[in-house]
Image (cartoon, rainbow, N blue to C red; front, side, top):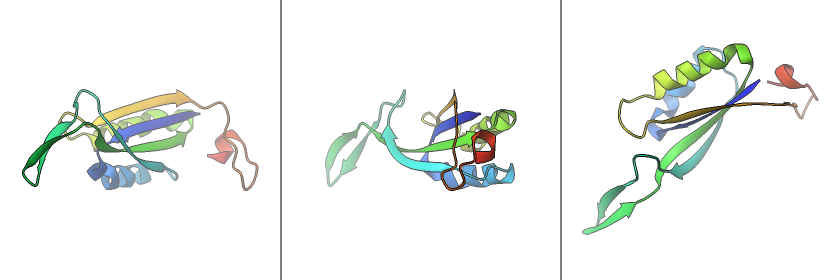
Length: 112
C-alpha cells in the first residue's frame, strides 16, 4: 500500500478529481496549503503598492492506494495537473504500514 501525496495548482483540482474518479479512485483528501519551490513567489500590485507574495496557494491531495494501482494514479495526476509552466507541483509516494477503517475495523487493502 502507498500514500500518494500531490501538490497541485488549485484550478486543476476538478480535472484531477474527475480523472482519478474515471480510473476508480474512490477516496481523496484535499487540503489548502501554501508554499513555494523554484517558483519563489511573485510580486503583486495592490492599491498602488507593490508587495511580494512569498507563499503561493496550492492544494495537497492525499490518496491511499494499493500497490497495483499506484503507478496509474501517479500517471493520471501528472498528466492531468500539468500545465507546462513552472509551479505545476510535485508528487510524493510513500509506503503505508497499516490502514484501519474506523467504522468496521477492516485492515489494509480492505480498508482502502
